[in-house]
Length: 124
Image (spheres, rainbow, N blue to C red):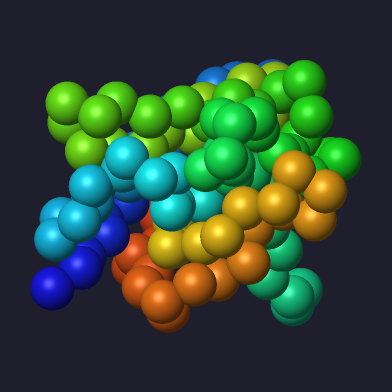
């Protein structure tokens, strides 16, 4: 059975950094089938980042480009989202999920496997 577990959220001041982790069990990360989403209060869920399984190219939503970095550690079966220069508008619950990643359109949920979410709050 496939499980995803996120960690790393918390309260951080504007300009600060956090690294989110997503540990996968029940399958391996060899095919880059995990991406990141977020949902802010009162807003729809949006894709944040993913890695294409075809050529390892990355996709980021425009608002996080240059500030967030997605990566993976095969040995630990873990995906990461390094978030720098955080802004109050980055406040949201962040989810990792199984996805298909398009470098043009970002992540699309696939197999309907989601982590429990981790809250990121950016506030002074």
